Length: 288
Image 1 (cartoon, rainbow, N blue to C red):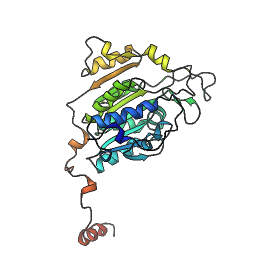
Image 2: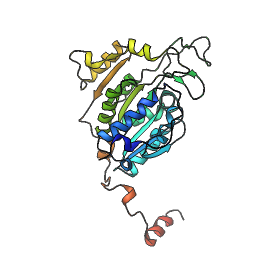
Image 3: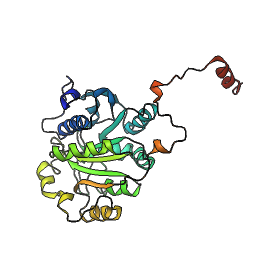
Image 4: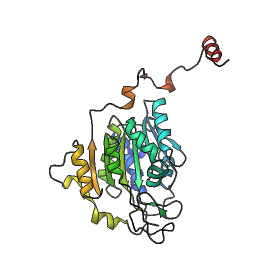
C-alpha cells in the first residue's frame, strides 16, 4: 500500500517560502495515501497561476492546462478513464474568474471528481492584482484606490448551483485539510474544496494571522448538520463565508456517470476502439 512519500517526486516547488500551497500539496499526497490510492490511480489536472504548478509536484499522472480550463480537462479525463481518481486544482482567479463558467457547470453536472481551489484573494503569479475573491477596498496594482467590487461568495454560489460536497479549510490546518480532501475523493460526485492559502508576497491583508483571527470552525458550532443545506447557507451568510470544515454533503444524489445511459464500466483506455472497415465506410458515407 502506498504512503504519502510515494506521491512525492524530485521536482522542487518554486513557490515563495511560506506560501500556503506547500501545505495543500502535502495534504493531497497524504489524503491520496489515506484513500488507498497508488500513484498510477491518480490524475492531477491544474490550471494557470502559482497554484497551477501543483500538477508537476505530485508523483501521479499530471496535466498542466490553460487558464481557467482545468475542469473541462479533468472531466474529460474522468469520462475517458473512470478507473482514475481525478483531482482538479487551481487558484481563485483560475476557478472563479476566467474559469467560473466551467466551475458552475461542473458543480451542476456532479461528475465524480474533486476540485481543490487555493484561494489567496489575489493574482500572485502576475505580481499582485485584485481577484474575484478580493474584498471591497482591497488595494493592489490593479486597484490602487481600492477595489469597488464585491468579493464573490463562492461557497454560497456552490450551494445555489446544486453542489453535493462543499468544504473549506485553511492551509495551516494540515490535519483538517487532509481529512476533507480524503472525504472529497471518496464522495461519489463533484467535490469542491476551497482552501484559504495565504500569499505571503503580495497579500498583506489576508495573512495567516488574519485568518486565525477571523475563521470559525464548523465543529465549534453546536448542532451543525452538514446534510442540512438551508443551515449551511445560513451559517455561511452569518459568518461572511469565513468557516472551515465540511459545509454540506448530499450522499443521495447520483453522480453524472451513474446517470449516463450505457456508460461502460470499463474505461475507454481499456476498450478496443478500432473500427472495422465496414463500419468506417458506413460512417464516411454519411458525409459523402
